[in-house]
Each structure stands twice: as C-alpha cells, then as structure tokens.
Amino acid sequence: MKRLGKSALLFVAIGLLIYAGVYYAAERLMVRTGHSNPFFKIAAAPSGTVDWLILGASHAMPLDFADFNARMEGETGLRIVNLASPGTGPLYNRFVLEHFLRGHRARNLLYVVDSFAFYSRTWNEDRFADAKLLGRTPFEPAIARRFWDYVRRQGVDARAFLDYAAGFSKINNRKRFEPDVWEGEAQFERVYRPSAAAAKKRIAYLYPEQTSPLVLNRYLEQFSALLALADQEGVRVVVIKMPVPPQFHDQLPGEASFDGAVSRLLASRDVGFQDLSLTMGEPRFYFDTDHLNRAGLTEFFVRYLKPILVAGKAR
Image (cartoon, rainbow, N blue to C red; front, side):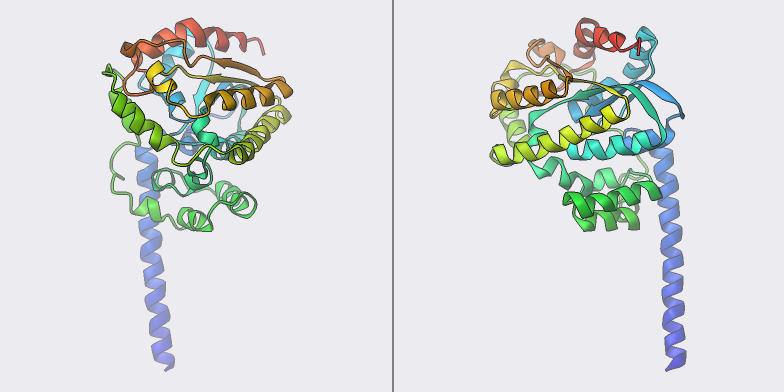
C-alpha cells in the first residue's frame, strides 16, 4: 500500500512538473506575441509619468491602431498610453487603472465612455472571465491579488480567478502563435457600406438585456470610484463620447437618460465631458457599424482630439 501511495505521489509530481513547464512556455509565448492586452502594455511600458492615459472599450482602440498613437505623440509632443480593450465597462477599466497606477503615473486620463458598458455585467464582471483577455494577460502576483479582491468584493466569478492563476486560457489559446491584434485593426483602412440590418444586429449584441436604471446606477458607482481613484492620484480626467454614424446612434436604447445621468455625475466631480457622438456622420469615416477608420480618426484627431490633448500639456 505504501508503495502504491508513493507511486501515486510520484505520478502527481511528474504531472505538476509537466504542467508547470507548459505554463511557463505559454507565458513566454504570450510575451512574444503580446500587443493589445492592457496588462501586457502596462508591463511593457517604461517607468515614469505619461501625459495621457486612455481607457474605454473598443471605440477608443483605433487610437492605438497601426501607427496612429505614434502620430498623435509626434504631433503633440506628448507621451500617450492607450489601455482600452474591447467590451470593457467601468469595473474592468477600474481594475486596469489600479494596476497601472501601482507602478506608473499619469497627468491626464481620457476616458471614452459608451452607454452599453453601463447596462450589463456582460461588459463588467463577466469580462474578467473572458478567455481572450485571460489568454493574453501576463501572470503577476500583484494582478492575482487584485483579481482575488475583485472576486471577494465586486462579484467577479471565482472561476475566472482560478483560470488566471492556473493559466488555463493561456495554455489552451488556439491562436497562441498569432499576434494579439484585435480583429478591428485589420479593417482600419476600410470604408464601410451602411447597413441597417448590421447596425441592428450590433445594437442587439451590445445591449443583451433591457436597459435598467438600477443596473445603470451600479456601474455609475463603479465609474465614480474610478474617478475618485484618479483624483486621489492627482490625475486630471476628461470624458468623451466618440463619433458614431447617425444610423447607429439613433438605435441606441435610452441614450438620453444615460447622457443625463453621466453628465450629472461628471459635473458633481468637476470632470470635463464632451459628447462628440454626432460630429462626424459621413459613412466614409467608418470601417464598420460604429468604429472610425483611419480617415475618420485623422479628421477626428485634427478637429477635436488634438486640442483636448494639448490642453493637458501644461500639467
């Protein structure tokens, strides 16, 4: 019986060693193929202070497509780090901001706000369990500790933490050998042909549940906590809504109510807010139902964003 027990322990030990080796190899491969994951960007960022940090969901991501971030830095003389990621609401963005501020500083924060991200746990608690995000997030003890704290205090599923700690999504990532590039970046040069059916489908995807004032209030509280953290760390915040086509904007559910609620919150915290959602209506400026292409982003930067960024230069 003792011999059987020793054999079982040896078998388990060998299995754990093999798993550890696979985990290490997956982690190293993730580092080589990393690109758009916010925690990868934080790990790769030089120490020191950045002039602007950018947070938000996918509408903010084109600002870092191809060479566009480098162009903005070149034209403004500012250091800009974009940590936006697809489908992430205020809870996940707060998680990202907390980790960034652990080892870096920012003078200004540009938060690109989207109403869909305030109406469902799909874009908040559930994003912590997203296999694509987990598969590209480097393992760090500090991230693990903060992740567990979100499980304990913010309702994040404990299985998401176990996935992160065990590296399951990283090891089983079928695209592990491919660069971590969001699918939208490949369409950055494209000009979209408007489609009412496509816009309707996109809205249904972004708003999987009925818009609820109770849910909105919960995530406004999370957004308020993010703003409080920025204020505590001496980071000036500017909030904007990115341009979207009128065909898309007209289908957004409860947008006026959301605008009123977020405006009141930002005013109470003396945070600047610019709603630019209807400033660029021409279809030639978009690569899909609601994301600016290179031509659109260039126009947006020159007309609207550059003055915002330069205004924060003196801080």
